[in-house]
Amino acid sequence: HIACLVPQPKLPQNTGELFYDRTYHLEEFARMGCIPHLIEVNDFFRMKATAESVPEVTGSLVAIVDRHNIDVVHAEALYCARIAAAVKKTRTFVCFSIDWHGIAPEESRMGGAHDNRVRALEEEESIMLAASDINIFVSEAMCGHYSKKYSNPSKSHVIVPCCVTDQR
Image 1 (cartoon, rainbow, N blue to C red):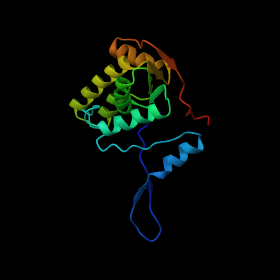
Image 2: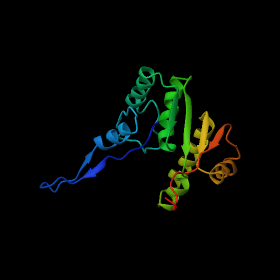
Image 3: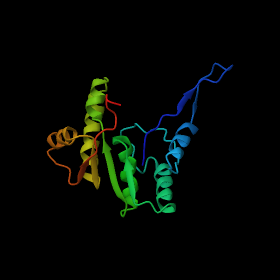
Image 4: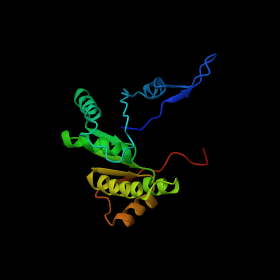
């Protein structure tokens, strides 16, 4: 599972200086029975990031896949999917899945992103939808959104409803 995680902000007593605790997510995933590996990426949100531009990240993930005999690489969202796709290129036996629980271009547009970024995100969405072995959507409506927007229904997909509701 590849996820974009922001370290937990901490304000230690008596220092007044904010720092980010990278162990927070390690502990969180370990409690769930995972063997987490944190790999920092300095230019994660750069639109032209490729396997070639972040070889240490791709290489680290490939090494983890090999060491642990991993056969599924699951990306939590669009930005993570770009890196997972790079792993898939070198380890073609890996099943590459993406969790589509947001609409990055539209969300970016609402946040004031430049039109060029919105178009680049749309291009990445289209590429990743086609490149993945399986697309996981949070709802039929989300699946329908992508099918309508790109006129290419997902070749293989599953609906896994979001676990966050106003009932819990």
